[in-house]
Image (cartoon, rainbow, N blue to C red; front, side):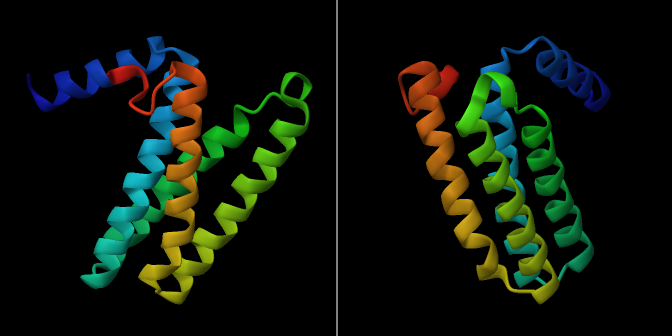
Length: 129
């Protein structure tokens, strides 16, 4: 499959995906992006670090935008606050050029992703088991 064909396939998969799977994909993408940002920061590849940080922030914004405060109540409000906290923490770590500054956010993202996989799919392996 060509690069363009694969990207089209990925886009189709996202558009038709189960909303719960999309949430998990956003968490996975944010985690991967922050790990990449750390790697690029250690390598002093600042532009690539910035791109990875921006991708993580974009994914957090998607998660925030998907919150339903009417149906989600207190949980949605708490997630909104958590996403805002993570956003500030990521921005500060990036500005401080501190690779370890991403670690607390990565850890919390992984923890919540695992909890969501269990809640949504009954397993930490999520929908891909």
